[in-house]
Image (cartoon, rainbow, N blue to C red; front, side, top):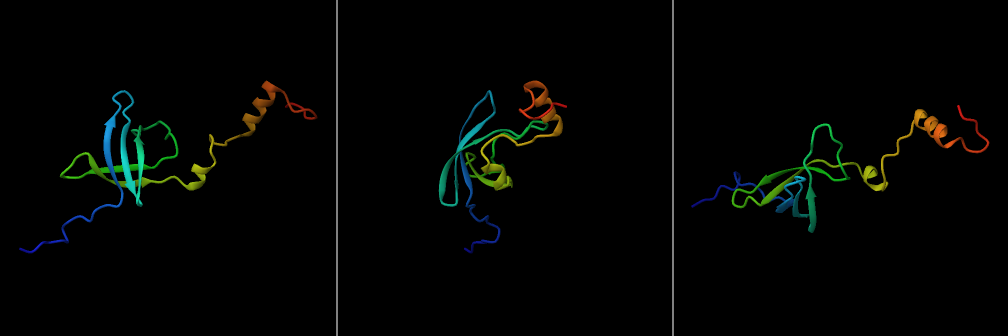
Length: 114
């Protein structure tokens, strides 16, 4: 009997074993194996109109036919390294922000408030 290997799917190097779900928050927990490493994973649902929390990827999971708890992982969005590495909230300031700061807390010594 011959085996047709062209129709078989190549095993993925990025897989996740789903371990549990928090019913209140909708978070899904699991173990993810990629690049020879195993890491703990926490996935949150993406909700339209809400900001993405954290510095994680957006992924799509495709369950294996023989085991629904084991999924292939496809990365849909991987944030740029610079967005991950600064270690704090977004650094956004504007003229209005600075003016309001000065009106509330006062201008620095030697400066006049507008």
